[in-house]
Image 1 (tube, rainbow, N blue to C red):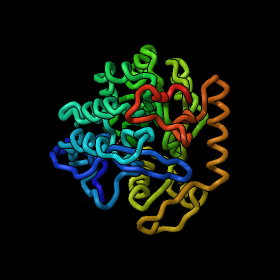
Image 2 (cartoon, rainbow, N blue to C red; image 1 turned 90 degrees about the vertical axis):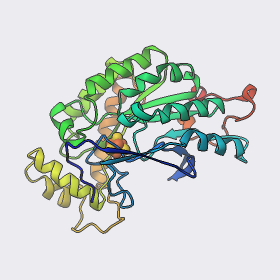
Image 3 (cartoon, rainbow, N blue to C red; image 1 turned 180 degrees about the vertical axis):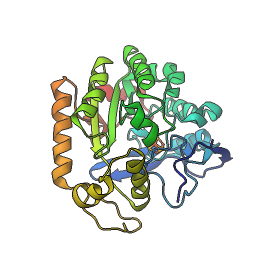
Image 4 (cartoon, rainbow, N blue to C red; image 1 turned 45 degrees about the vertical axis):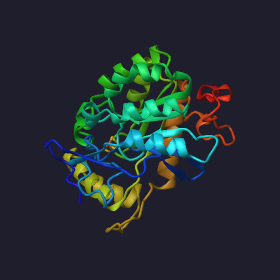
Length: 317
Ligand code: SF4
């Protein structure tokens, strides 16, 4: 199992990769994704990317040193005439501290821009500010999403000890908003009994609103065997009495042990209630409770080769 709760600095290691850009389909959504790194220093206890094939996920960060070259080779030889928006990244944070050392995300983004690919970034980091020039110059065709789970520092230090505080993140978001780059906040995952109160959600939403964020959305935690083990530690560290019992009996309704590979969502009644509360409170502040629809629209894909017919993401925001 991953050693999650630790103050130890991770080790960095370079490795070569055979392939970088991959397609994905999640429910009705499809797209492309790149992961310039394997592993993540942000140490989120709820992380979904901690699979058994990556047992040292938090402690060893692999930098895919040939990522920009492989990406360019794949894009150059791609058979398709158009490209889906590219998610950066699905299984790591592309702007975690390793990026300061290796710069692979920046170089991959330069390749995507060269091939006129639309992209959206998922990060919890403030390091993205280094690439303001890059994203600002491409602002009609990119979209930046920060995952902010809480504005409560006491909670953040326990659930995601390697991430920056939310006020530092929002200072960076404000700079991108002011630069005209489209920004979103993803409150994901919402942690039952920890960050799901209206007070907690309002804190994040008010801060989004104050900083000009237009799109806000979120999702409730899902459990897997390894995630559950870490969440038990989180509940204990935060002193939430009955938390483990309530997760098992009320919120997620499962029996231990969770079988390997099985994902458990919260009960429909809990999930619907929380997501309804979230949506209502987002809309009440005049923000949009969803990802921009351009991301998932079919048959509206930009040409990779003919910039004259380039559709921009902003057409769908
Ligand atoms: S930032 Fe994302 S990839 Fe990194 S540990 Fe947190 S949830 Fe996992």
